[in-house]
Amino acid sequence: EIVCVIAGDGSLRTKLLEQAQKLGLENNLFLVGNKSQTWLGSLLADSDVLVFPLAGRGLVEAALSGTPIVAYDTEWHYELIHTNESGILVEVDNPKVMAQSVLALLDDRQNGMRLAENLREKVISDFDTRDLIRLEKSFVSELIQSHMEKKSNDG
Image 1: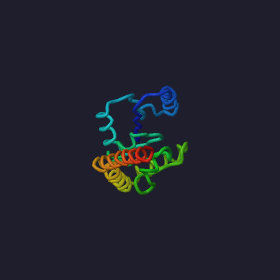
Image 2 (image 1 turned 90 degrees about the horizontal axis):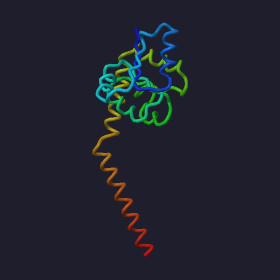
Image 3 (image 1 turned 180 degrees about the horizontal axis):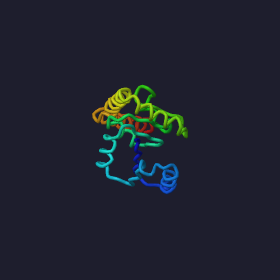
Image 4 (image 1 turned 90 degrees about the vertical axis):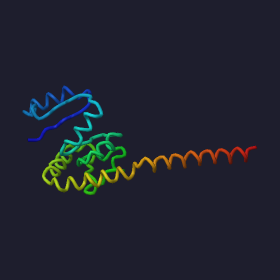
């Protein structure tokens, strides 16, 4: 009953299709290729669980969808996702635990929604535009001030 949708393209496409056929899961796997942000936004919001081996900026966008997330503990994922608080982090290259985590979220939808809402609130708070602009202005002002002080000490 589980369907897996993979967006994007890459060198593993043929291997994934072959493996799905070998396991009799070809009707459960959809490799949709590259899609627009609008299309991806709909997919994120309509999904039951999102899985991210490696996400980059997409993790922030996915967090805003209000969908529970399972991700590998790599790059900066740990800055947003805390296991059993705002999603589930899994040891890198451990697909068995990742799959078990996805199934656990599918079995306990209420917990998944709690994690997703906590993550969404965290992202909204951490990435508030006004705060980011204020921090950027402060940083630039400090750089200018530091440069001016150095210039006056050198001159």
